[in-house]
Amino acid sequence: MFLAFQLSDIVTVPFGYLLSFLYQFTGNYGVAMILFAVLVQVVLMPINAKSKKSMMKMSRLTPRVQEIQSRYANDPQKQNELIQKLYRDEGASMGGGCLWSFIPLLILWPLLAVVRQPITYIMMESADVAQQIVSVIKEAAPTMFSGNSYYDQVIAAQAIPQFVEELKAAIPGISEVTLAGINFNFLGINLGTIPQFNIFSETWVWNWAHIGAFLIPVISAASQVLQMWISQKTNNSVVTNEKGIQDEETAKKSQQNQSMQTMMWMMPLMSLWIGFSVSAGLSLYWFMGGVVRMITDPIMTNHYRKIYDAEDAVRLQKALEEDRLEAEKERIRAERRAANPDGITTNTSKKKLQKQQRDQEQAAKAAAAKEYAARKGILEEDEEDSSCMSGIPSRPYCKGRNYDPNRYASQPTEE
Image (cartoon, rainbow, N blue to C red; front, top):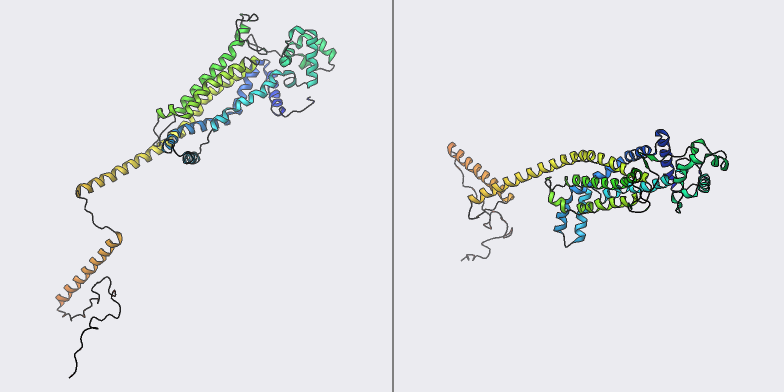
């Protein structure tokens, strides 16, 4: 049992239980590490899918983002507002893909604690018992240990079967499972050792154990380069313009593509450096995680590509319909220009057209009434002059209601 609980144990203890179960189940540390890597990737599948979806969405919007940037190059505030609005409307998240992609790296550090302290986390012994085991074996065989105590538990865990009697005498009640130790051998490679980078050093030996340990971090870094390259190609394939047509040139010049280019070399180099700084078992885990991602990445890309292709098809159809309507409007305008080359236009106000139509209808009715009366022989009486006093039909009272045209005329005098 653990004598003290640390915050990091929230992650390391479940990792230790899972790795211990897989080791007991398979009887092989390397196979247990491979299965552990696969299970971790399965658990991270929703996160990886979210990251992939976000990265593809950002790639898809690249042409429209660049158009906004070029249009408002002198107004950064307006530029940021429009870009943010575009991302909100499209359901994209700035930096979402990159942030989610760092989660596997964060898992690596708790796993490192589990790998370098197998007696504590895999054999489930307390910190005091683990220290006693290391002390007993170090006292019996001090040459097995180096000056760096960082990996003392790894060295002691694989040497336990050689010092069973000493351990029983020093630690009464020690379990038989712990006395069995841990076999780090996998395909002739000791996964508990740190791969040696300098092949020209005096301690280097040209055997499969050294060569295999050397190849694990190298192959892991190379697989990450391949994985990043595939991811970059798939992301660029979904870059489309506002009409839904693939835009390869914009994809190559995009900021996201340049960031991917940087990460394509930065992450593998980091993996290579870590691989030659920790035990080979951790590099094997990282390599298998990359293999799983290389398999699942095209599957997720194909899934989201179908969704985005359907959206692009709708956008393209809409754009084609808008182009067709605009072409039809231009054709009509061209016909009007041909029919009226001088550009003379009449007043086409809606209200005036309606008034002209009403006047025409009233005139037609009046003409029909007169024709009917003439046929029937009806004598029309002289109608009272209904002309307005102002002389302006549309403004009959513009000279006032009491207007009298003879008011100031000279009056005849009586004799």
